[in-house]
Length: 129
Image (cartoon, rainbow, N blue to C red; front, side, top):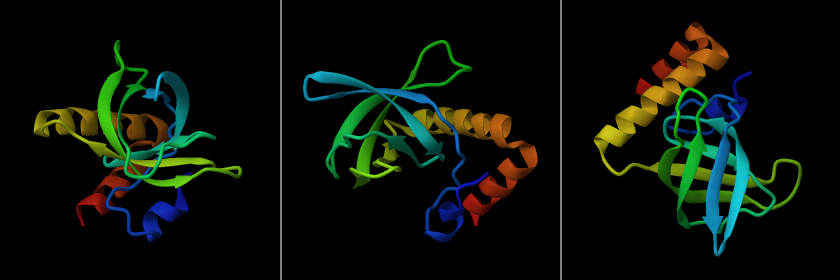
């Protein structure tokens, strides 16, 4: 089911409930957490220890269809440190247009594989409005 907040909270991109492993470094420790949902513009990472808002960090997103993880920069734009839905909202920061296009096509394929072509097209069409 599509995250109902994504249609009503002013997000620029529709989100899909896709869980992927995310590896990143905080201080001198490495963490492995999971996404709860993803869009072309960002993701929500489930974690009991979110990074501070405004933190830019490099993370590796493990996508099943790829041999190597996708490495991206992300900015923490919001955080919820406690409760059942603890985690952090991440906005992707692309190095260039080629990286953006490559990653957006991966997200589109993940959405289609998980949600089906019709729902994916409705979400993507909403993005272009």
